[in-house]
Amino acid sequence: MIESPLLKNILGYINGDWADSEDGRRIAVRNPVNGEVLAEIPNMGSKETVRAIEAARAALATPASLQQRADWLNAIATALLDNRREIGRILTLEHGKPWKEGQGEVEYAAGFFSYAGAHVEELAPRELAEKARGCTWTVHYRPAGVVGLVTPWNFPAGMIAKKLSAAIAADCGSVIKPSSKTPLTMIALFSLLHDVVGMPPGRVNLVMGSAGPIGDALLQHPDVRVVSFTGSTEVGKELIRGAADQVKKLTLELGGNAPFIVFEDADLDAAADNLMANKFRGGGQTCVCANRILVHERVADAFADRLKERVDRLKVGDGMDADTDIGPLIDRNGFEKVRRHAQDALDKGAQLVTGRVPAPLDSDWGAFFPPIVLKGATPDMACWNEETFGPLVPLVSFDSEPQAIELANETEFGLASYLFTADEERARRVIARLEFAHVGHNTGSGPTPEAPFGGMKQSGYGREGGLEGLFEFIEPQTVPRGA
Image (tube, rainbow, N blue to C red; front, side, top):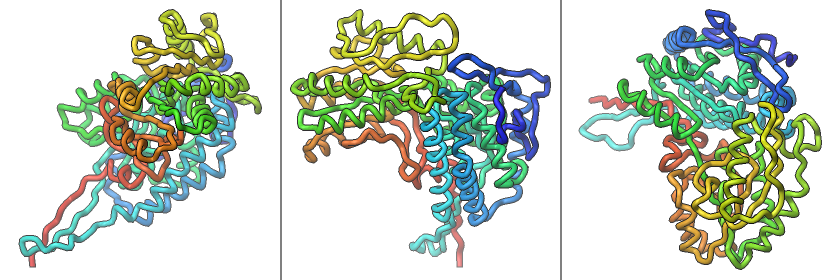
């Protein structure tokens, strides 16, 4: 069992107090390295979620000033940074990613709270310069109400930071539901909110357990006005249908299928370095990592050689080992999906550049998948049409700029994309035609707290980060005042 000063209470959190499930049911949280039970969390459901919603609603009766919100946000950022090593350790034990990555994720999370704290004044009322219809017009940015924040397992600290920072800035009360695979990082955060930051009762609430009962309660309760979800497109569609009756607002960051385009004039070493950093973060289990690598035919072999050289140096192992580059995949299902994609590509004619397709797992844990690079990928392969979520790198060559654009856009998703070229005019043309909300130009960088991030097409709608993200939990109220 895990021991940590930040995990004295392995419980939910409702109305300022640690809370158990009403029926005492538990869910085991396991280390993906070996299946060791780290902790048992409450398996909460609709009753506990309703209590949390009611507490969040009651907290709205005591509005917080912009300065108070800024103080909370800055205090959370400081608390995260002061505890980055321990939270990073907890994150690594339940997720599997290397400890250095876990600490980096905590720093990333702190950045969202810092940014929101520094820019919360953007939500101050503003008076229009125009005196339309003989009136003075003021726009107030009111909290939308109670917000439900539902986060995935792959970024236990980063994903909640994107949502909660904006919710606190907007002065909303929150009900947070983390993945049952990685809830301990969230409990550690709530320990800081309770013991260090001193958030008032009801402002932040934590419920854990099966997604169905908790999600249904968030969708059905009239006091929940916004649900923010990061996860699969399939679940996102269910939320859209479920939110229709009460016309709830949704913010959705859904699936991806990111193209990574390397033109013939690109700096191949820089492109390879950026692909390594982009693709293998979190073992490839990120929604913004490159899923389809498109390389101009003139440089395809040279780029594959550079990639092989770098991939062959990676070490797969326990994330707590200092020299580990890639930890285990989250579970057997994740492992088998990557395995299926790799074998399907080879069966359909792809050629092995480096790596191997491992044997099936004989347990649910220890899903160590060696990174594998293939060339000759084609659009009929599973790895082309589905998000792999693992360390598989499929390369496909193209012969022209129009073909690269066509291949890149050949997906229903529109989250992240990347292109490498030395030609600024070509970059301008291609970026304008790429149907993705995030386009890295000569960089494999993903989101940052300072800029808005979200999806196009079936990758969702709404934005997190940047000034745009601050307004996702806001309802503008317009007040004309006569003389």
